[in-house]
Amino acid sequence: MTEEKAIFYEKISGLVVPIAIQNFMVAAVSASDAIMLGVLNQDSLSAVSLAGQIQFVLNLFWYAITTGTTILAAQYWGKGNREAISKILVIALKLSGAISLTFCLAASFTPGLLMRIFTTDPVLIEMGSEYLKIVGISYLLAGLSQGYLCIMKNSGFTLKSTMISSISMILNIVLNAILIFGLLGVKPMGIAGAAIATVISKLVEFVWVVADSYRKNRIKLQGKYLMRTDPVLRKDFTHYMLPVLGNQLAWGCGFTMYTVIMGHLGSDAVAANSIANIVKNLISCFCLGIASGASIMIGNELGKDALKRAREYGDRIWKLAAVSGVVSGLILLACSPVILQHVNLSDTARGYLKVMLMICSYYLVGKSINATIISGIFSAGGDTRFGLICDFVNMWCIVVPMGLLAAFYFKLPVLVVYFVLNLDEIIKIPVEFHHYWKYAWVKDLTRKQEVL
Image (tube, rainbow, N blue to C red; front, side, top):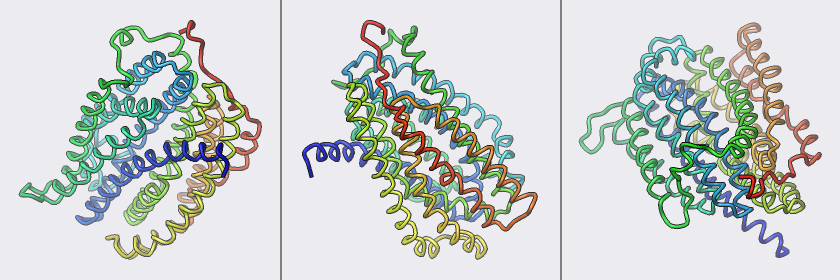
């Protein structure tokens, strides 16, 4: 291995591994909720899974904001402009705080209305509403934490960001066990316990990231920028963030439609789909870590105006993502027998899950490649419009209509509907590579110091 390749792998591993661990811990919390609530009963599992779709939609906004933050922060960090990054932090916190507060209020005061979007089952609506009333508080706390954690990743403190987030998630899992089942003399709280555990863990995370931001060499929240946001950076942030938001809403709301479709196919379909999604999310963590690492790493090189090196890094990283996707799919297949043996599902739901996991195994290959190229490489150079157009056409003009027809017009079996709904990551690969090889994403987006 040449010295140049050694430097590349050292850089990418230094970013990917911590971010992958952080992604895994986030997915592990969802898994712990499902496993522990599944022990109680299948309705608890299904209700929280459906209620979790509210945060899934909120995550789309958070993702767009953190992507806009990363696009600019990574390049300005490569340029060595810390002042610009401080201004970017303020922009991210204001936007994320406003959106998170809106979701917090909706979950707290209109939980039943939100649950009726996903199911008509009165039992699931009542149980999910109980969860949302409490967990809504965590939306605001987590929304503010996201901005700090994102800036930490982009300013040389990726490992510290991972440590804070991971310890918060571990606390969530421990509190889940205590509060759901009533361990250590605590009264069993069931679904309410899972919600309270989330709120406590997010409060700890928020306090920690704010305190850490005042340490030496950290990017700090500067009060002078709160009242007057830099107009140039705000314009750039909006320019690159809005297509990502459109992309995420097109993809995410389409993905939520999958849950709506499956939610109307019965409790067995909902439960099996919930477990399949959790397993898929756990195993895809390394793949998504590559995507996030690619965005930061290539953004740093573009900010340095090292365009040729950024292009070379992109070519290497998507190939690494393809290999990661294949390995992840094989791991999922290997784990499937163990998963099927230990889940607490009806025989029908277990049968659904067995085939769903097989479909997920090849789905992961497409997901790894697409996330790395669209969300990582393209975003690093500000090429965010392609993802918006690609996902809108893919989801809303092809896959969602096909899924609706399969489920409600042709009334095809549950597993056929699930197969149709998992075509989205496969369909867009050829178009994506056609765009990639134009190299329109190889751009330095930074402004000169005197402009800011």
